[in-house]
Amino acid sequence: MSTENTTLPATTREIQLASRPHGRPAPENFRLAESPLPELQDGQVLVRNLYISVDPYMRGRMNDVKSYSAPFALDAAMEGGAVGEVIASRSADRKVGDTVVHSLGWREYAVLDASATALARTDLAPASAFLGALGMTGLTAYAGLLKVAEFKPGDAVFVSGAAGAVGSLVGQIAKAMGASRVIGSAGTPEKVARLLELGFDAAFNYHDGPVLDLLKEAAGEKGIDVYFDNVGGEHLEAALSVLNVGGRVAMCGAIAQYNATEPTPAPRNLMLAIGKQLTLKGFLVGSYWQYMGEFVEKISGWLADGTIRYDETIVDSLENAPQAFMDLLDGANTGKMLVRL
Image (cartoon, rainbow, N blue to C red; front, top):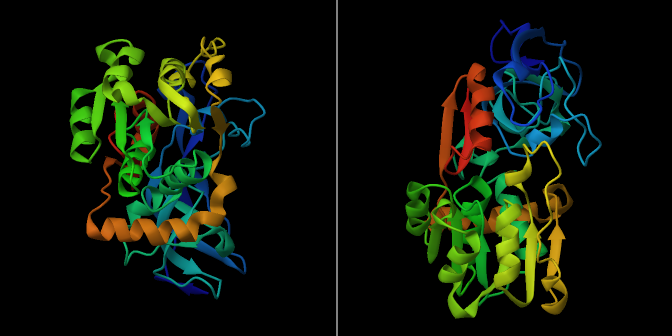
């Protein structure tokens, strides 16, 4: 076994799910605890996490309902993306000092099979980028736009939640690949200004009026061909009205509905999908891992030449991870929300 030094941690601090939230998560739903680390077995590594990711989809896993991903267990550490440094290894595939991405976040240290980690190419970008622009977040944007919405040059694209980690990349990828117009919505004037800095042709604050009116004004007479949906609700309804015949919708998320305690109504104008021959397709990034190599090759070039930029909102220390997650659901982040350990 190779180790960084002779003294390795025997325990780890972690965030556990103390109770299931009803509506918006609250501090009492989380617990900071200390748990023993299992002894390293053959083929395993011990990782010191550097950054952990908090993501909107985690809200669904806090509910005890059947879904595409198993619910978090009560009184156990939560899980999520993390990037960290290998400090001990019993695997020939991973050496001490390697930077790896894995799914045992929400804790300071993790023991896991080396095969459940991926090397982070820190020669391409800082480690934190592998939880965002060069990781699952970036692949979500890339695959959702190109493979799900079948974007083609000349398309006019609308992105909701456009100042978030995924949305900001969707808009920039669309511009890089020849979109005729890219429109974004966000929740503050500062975020709207940032979208324009990132190259969006138009952006609006959805608090300024009915989304339909704001979108019509931004799109003009030419309408939109692609809608990348991170929000659902009123945004989806507005997009259905403004989409052109043959338009496509990539349904990535519905953050407007994640904390709802009652069933939320469907768009009232869904019948438009028939006459306009629209395609609405939901997707999970896990079904598109085969495009990771293609994606990394393209986006690393765009990052290197400045075509694409990314933002991070960083919160320090593990004990603040629950608040960072709650703030994320309230839209407090610009770009990727990360917790630095």
